[in-house]
Structures are given as C-alpha cells and as structure tokens.
Length: 70
Image 1 (tube, rainbow, N blue to C red):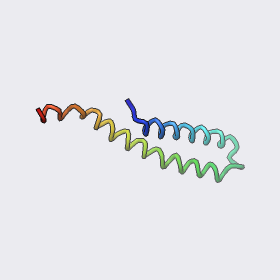
Image 2 (tube, rainbow, N blue to C red; image 1 turned 45 degrees about the vertical axis):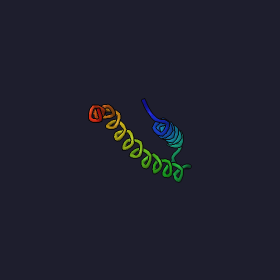
Image 3 (tube, rainbow, N blue to C red; image 1 turned 60 degrees about the vertical axis):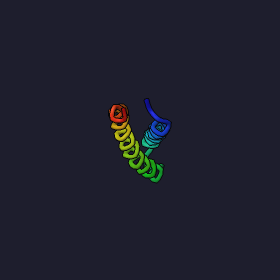
C-alpha cells in the first residue's frame, strides 16, 4: 500500500536518476545540469525516506489502538 505522494516522489526520483545517468555519459558538456540534478536527488531522497519511514510506523500501528475505544 502506498499513497499518491509516495508514488509521485518515487517516480520523480527515478526520472531524475535516469536523466543524471544520461548526462554522466558526457560530463564535460553538462557540468551545471549534473550538479543541479545531483542536488535535486540529494534533496528528494531524504524527503522520500522520511515520509516512507513515518508512514510505515503509522501503517503498522494503525489497528493497534482500536481496542482502546471499545
């Protein structure tokens, strides 16, 4: 189970990594773009990981408190 947010961030990360791989084939011409994409990936990666970790804790505990309200 994943949210639209998770799927979108994962897709964005995948696309940026693919684009970076293509640019790294000729690093001399694309230095600025390579640095920009690297920075974007470094920013997106922790956002995705933090959200994913937080949601995993929530998903595991989702039914954990239901018996308290009975």
